[in-house]
Length: 427
Image (cartoon, rainbow, N blue to C red):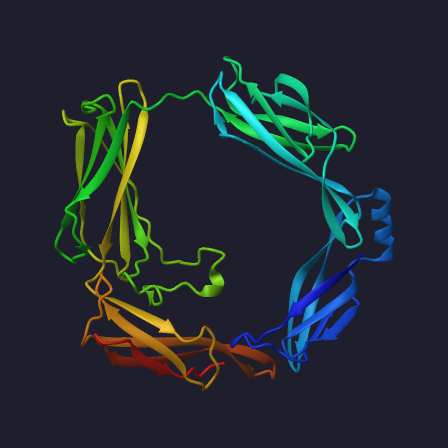
């Protein structure tokens, strides 16, 4: 199978396009232009024997290759460069319903569009499908509810309506659609549930509504309150309540300071996973009670002390209220506990650096409202890790870990950020 590929090669640090870089894939290679671009046509991703097998089976296949880029002594690769092979006309479906969730005895409306993608050269041109669609409706247990046909209109669209039985099974029902002449089909799902309208509403809050800070020796507390009110009027009194209180570390960025990093930073190249090994999650606490004649219930949440590494903490208080009919509704409130009065934020001019070349960094000190604070001593410790090539006692090459640690001190300003330049010694 052959394909066409366009590659764009740029410098990692600056993003500038790379000229005359050699781009190779499979049996083809080409050099980039001044914009860092090159296009490779008719490159093969499979051998002739496999291609013949696919033709006999008449199936679409997806092959991948490895892209290699070389420039001077630098080389990088990108794997799984996919090429989709499709030489067959294909039908595509788009089906949707009006609500998604239904009760027994309710009407279900389903509409859909069918297109025929005809291959013309290297393009697939959509056309309106024609014909009659057979459809069968099933309940969540797979029992057939109805079977019928519907004619596609001139725009390749269809619209059906059916009523769910009173004794229909609850769960995920589905409808199968098929075009018999084309051997094309699809399945559409919908939910069936028996539910009641809630007879009451719940809400929650914490007080006092002030900023909260950790203290190393003094206990502090917050009152969490929940309330249930009947829609018909009055309060939900003498109702059972189950409280769940959970606390854990979180991140906090003062208002209007989103361009700075506060607290422990997560490397940008670790966005795809949770690499914060210092995250703390405290054990959940459970409390039970009953609402009073005003539908209220309160708990007192106490906290004290500071972790070895001060971190912002968020506390969630979830209240589940159950009425006499065993209807359960939940309400959740939360509050933040700050580890200190001020926050230190930093901003790097680049995510990459070079050995013996200064890297510019901006540092600020703010309160929890984002206001700059003046005359605060800031100590910045920059630590770099690397490996150094050496020979051991037997003359073999080994790599020893080395560390570059620098400590810089500046004083904050309430006018603007303070600039700090440090020079990496490793690289």
